[in-house]
Image (tube, rainbow over the protein chains, first blue to last red):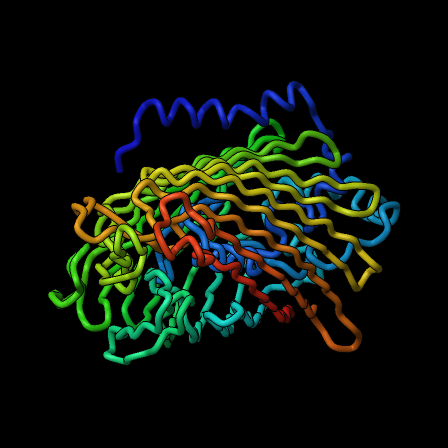
Length: 76
Length: 424
């Protein structure tokens, strides 16, 4: 797979975003009660999420998100 | 992969939760999967869903999926998922409408008649079986690895893939970095053989065509406050091999009247590089939770897209929640997309009139309702989505009679998901 240095530089800038946004923000362990809830995830329902990914992959030209898996369907 | 039910059930009132978690929150957060393991001692979860999908006048899909997830005492997760797709109906062939009745022949030799002024479609029936496995293993307090395998087969397409991710927790678990990669080895075996690109389709080659997909993932997530979690993921996909849609065609039209006189097959480049950047946010309000994502996508075929997605989860009580959902998507056309070609003019190197590679807007509105009732164990989930897809029905390069037609009719789709999960 050919990935240019320019691409890695762009990816680094983008990935720095949460750190810049956060600054020195910290949350003590005893203040993480809400974060411990199962619904405090990016994808609390993985099966519904995978169904959505499949539907939109078949109907649109785009793909990509939080998974490294590609291919797997002849629908598009 | 995450166990859904233990943490997906509605949360108790905040004060009770605080009291219950207290200092235990530290221990739960430090060990991946510990929260799920601690919940009623569950070790195995079964998830079953059925997708019912119907496009108005086009494709219909029924897809039951069964998944079993086993959680081990040391935090490892192993899951297996089996799914079947039954797909029937029709999709646009790529040909243009005509002021007269048209006839067309499918790859299997079936002849259909297309009424004047209507977009020609091709009927199809297919079955797909997919098997996915995933193994997640924590290493110490900071590292978690995930390995996934995939295999699927359908009448004209087979796929075998593997992928992996490694996550590192930093800054007392406030910051997580994830790297991943994947590889998929697919083969495309069109029914009736593979037609030469941009030909009349009569000359075909038999046998499978290779398609390989390599992927890379870089992601970070950050706890911003007691209520807010954000993340950014960058993915890159490199596709090589047979990327053409063998059943699609393009009309050759008269340059003055616009009437379709003939047609040629679709032809796309044999490489495609895709990049996406996904920004994610989860925010806990006083009781409810708001999810939001924005994705920017670009590829070497010059498709650009922007996607916004929002959900709002409202827990009605300890056993039920309601979650409305909206999604907006807009893409530009691939640089070789055209609604048709003109007879007598030189053929381009690549061309497609597949509406999915044209300018496109998708709007989705839906909602999920989840509940469980005693004494039946587990959780039931119902989700309904309305999807409206619009292209450019009056492109600037339409000629003659084509200007009188809507070349990209709106596609209305309804999808419903019924799911049931339980653990033991």
